[in-house]
Image (cartoon, rainbow, N blue to C red; front, side, top):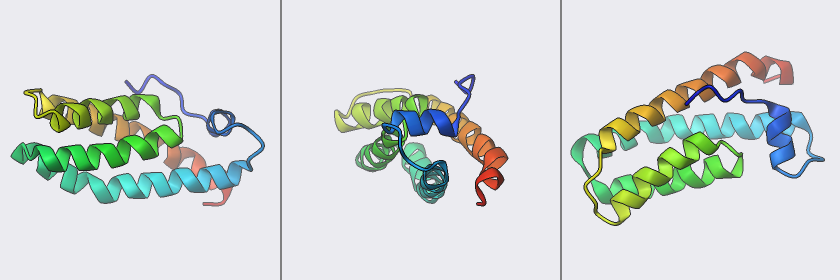
Length: 119
């Protein structure tokens, strides 16, 4: 999944252009922090097969990742959210593991570029 090369300029373009890259980098930093805040509860929900909680957290993270064009992350959240919302049997753990890998890829990329934007 992480073969996607993230790029601040691509996020600016996704957002419609005309936005200062430093502001976009700050928004990505907020996204990364939010994901880190939510991930422990998400992991607990998946481990406990707590489908209402999986739906709620998945929905929240799906929206925030969609707003920044992080499509792979968004798709995984949507898979978790939709299956949980419909109370369907699904390999939540494997999908959450892929989500964790995508999260790590975004974090590593952001860590490598944030100093370029004074963050």
